[in-house]
Length: 423
Image (cartoon, rainbow, N blue to C red; front, side, top):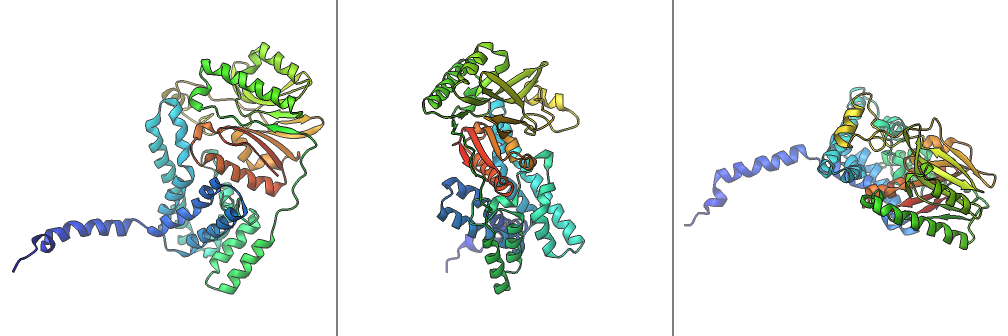
């Protein structure tokens, strides 16, 4: 009789079982499933915003809420994977500081941060024996006050921003309540129907101006090279002159379209002023004032120029949001570069007596900006820092949430991603 020593050897069983046991004990499949469902609406939105896409996202969003509130999971792992799937792209900007090795480090740190946030929240709710409906209420309102280092892009409304539902707090609450009452089929179904009835109010009318949004695709690794800046400037003037030929009233170029301190370039300023007799020019550029650096928007109209400095900076991108060690961090990682300075308020300007709110990149995702009175927003972004990634889509979904809820029209000119109008 022949014996299979490999299959029957007790050491083989001793080696394999601990691995399976470790995986089973410490890895929660439900957490991964929940995080994937929470991320899918963003990734599906890469395909567009047609009816079929919106329909799929609607079902995915409902499934995500059901998974979060119904499946038994490890909340640390849920937060870890949500943080990773939503924000892995943040570290990509380090590629342009010769710090590529920090990209995976940043991804892990961000994921751990959100993992601890979800773990702490779950511990609090468990220890205080709060009913699960309070988890739902926190989901609707709590993330508005969760700003790690002033960064608040984790908004549940994003899940339904590109869906058939209105991405409002009320709709979000109804969908979460439907998920919580899923076992009571009739109640859950009625709540879903109620959520579907809340539709956006009639959108604001477009201003009586013909506005040309310029899309550029300047790679970030070339954008600030001296030999490449001339090409960018030449291209910018070509965009402006084409817009004049096409009889536009306004032409809008992206953030830092002129990658220099434009106010220190008299020849460029004079040329732009002269062109502004034929068309209003809105463009991004740097601004040097009192030996301090500003990220700014320049508005040229009728041979006059107005400069609006950025009010809200990108944490760790344009400033270090820490009370200590700012200089040390800038020296260690950013070659001793200084933080950008800020304006004391959001900028508002007029074009042919019509008021616009100025938004430079990150500012366009700050809800406070949308509470200002003017109905129209002109936003400039440079998304090349994070290409290729989901960052431009996530930014667009957030802007869509705020524009719909505050009834604003947003004109967004971008480098690295297709420009668009949201109304």
